[in-house]
Length: 310
Image (tube, rainbow, N blue to C red; front, side, top):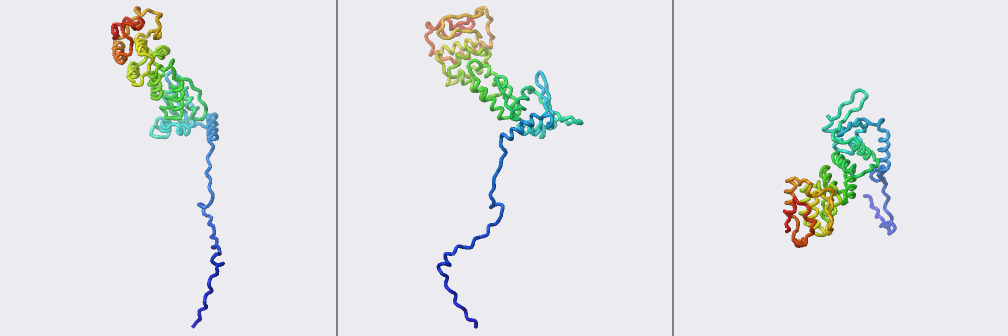
């Protein structure tokens, strides 16, 4: 029988001996990683280079037919598609049948109608990273084009410019045009300017005040936040809108016009009907007694019999 040798007890030194180091595996998940991204300025530089060498790199000819003129633009379809969802659909998607196939060495052609050539040129410059200089008229038209082609950063930039441009001298014209181009923020800003103590000032300074849609004027008068120095100013503003005459400011005793109000033909019956409707929104209880109303207030013989004053 084999005799078993007794095992020696483990010493304290053996207990404190560090465990054997495990071999590090060279798996990819254990290796350090880093993500690199192209600098936006470098991307913009490439877009600028593409724009400068458009004749060499272009693969589609965009024909823009405006109201009075048309112009051809050599374009890179992929760049347009990356900036505009509608243009992407026209070039590569469901609406690609709008592109005329190329014949020989000519490029495929895409015809755009309802956009002015100068406006598309600015849009193209913006897509390629170039700066676009704006004035109010250009911003309105460019807003409409950018909204239609869904170049949203350009649309929002034009909108911000227009909001900053609103003042007493152009409020009405911008209000009317905001509805034409569908710019709701601009319409709201103009209505707020009229409502917050500027109705009288705008009626005197903006030459387009008489052309204001009476529905918009009623919208302003119905606002609970309508502010005016005196209710007399509100009545004078309505008279200016109805008569299209330069009335004196409230408190003035003089009145001079290039043509006597007696000599001017009366406004249309429709306008007169709107005047009566708008006058219902005047807070007549805030006006002074009839005997103290200045003589220039009922300036027009066409409406003075209908004012609720004696």
